[in-house]
Length: 403
Image 1: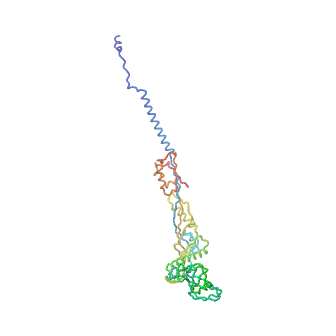
Image 2: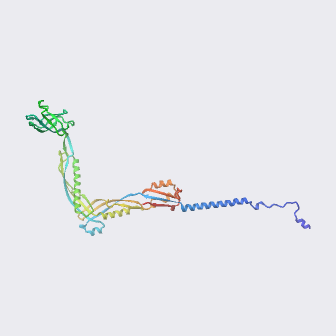
Image 3: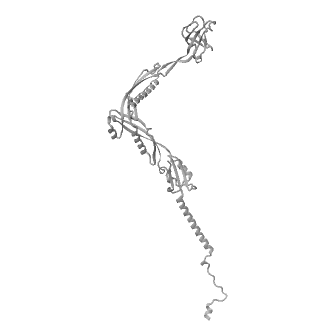
């Protein structure tokens, strides 16, 4: 009994309270769980946004390429098939045709362009009418007075028959532009006043005023004549070769300058109204077919284009040819061919650098595209439509070429 008394706590002594540090209140635990849940939801949404961006956001750029001009040239050998044979021209890679030299000559009359003013005159013709019963002789320089008071004189002595008329040349006593009078009636003031209404003159045409000139040959007249006659020689050669080589689609002509000779029928400064020039020359003529050269030209144009370009237009009939030289002994000639075509972009990657437009805004992208060479117009499509910025991944940028 004594032992039990020792181990029992004394009465009225309170039992010790449990420690608060060993357990947490429910409210704090709920806040912690809430934070963890919200963080998980945020990370999930961020992950979904990233997945959405990489899966659905993209930009499509549609390029309408500009039509650009491209030009080039060729040097082609022409072999005369009649002299070299068909096989010779083909084996050398040249074009078969014809090459020859023809002699042409031509003559023309040219007007003198120089003129010195040596005076002026107002001249014309009038009809002297005699309604009197006697003949009326009129000496040269007899005065005629027009209805508006302008004085003229007859050029030669005439006899106006009674009841008849006679035509005579007249001239102004003091020539000037004002003396160019139209058809009118003239009195003859030197006659007795009683006869002036019976013997008078009339004009049917205007009296012409002009300056009297003396024509002479200028050096420019001779030079212009030589140029014109040279063209005439080429035209004559062209006509002759066209008739001879009708089966060839192209013919070229070139004057041999060393063979040109000309005879000029006047000298500079000589007083003449006109003069003659005769010219003779040898003209080299080449005839060939356009088709094989056109094929070579198109192939050269296509092969010369930069990467990403393609040939879209070539007119085989718009090739410009010139004759460089001709060797008549060998029956060969060398010609130059100049030509052009049209080209456009073949693919978008060759003109747009995707790395340069990553992350650009719509305004920045427009500025970049507007300054691209070889682009006629463009269209930009963002997906989704509310996006207005280029993705930061190159594979989310699609470039199309509109043909």
